[in-house]
Length: 129
Image 1 (cartoon, rainbow, N blue to C red):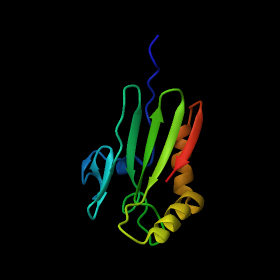
Image 2: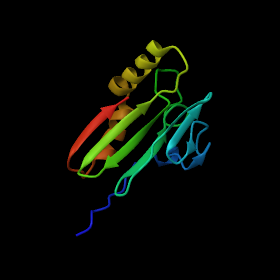
Image 3: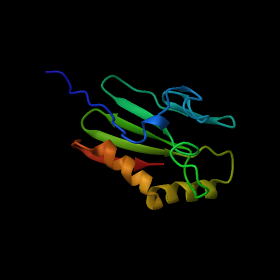
Image 4: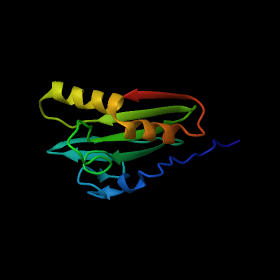
């Protein structure tokens, strides 16, 4: 019996899912990569895994409140689900932690994304930054 393939569905946020270099946002460096000012992070998948990169800064959120640059929604095998918040910084690490913390604890959009990601899913959700 094969593994059941699910699809990460992000109703209302799909226009900010990375689909290529600078598409739909300058932070996107491909479907599963973010790049800013020479700093880059890429997510690699193995068989049976799925993920999406979602551009937050300048796409999902365009205000002046603290926010992270983007996030990865990653579904591993064995019903393990992860959200990785990404803030690309060359310095000001304390400021970066503040942005990640604010995003995770004060942004209703983050809660909506988390709810959509886990809708109809079994298993655990782990949040990392």
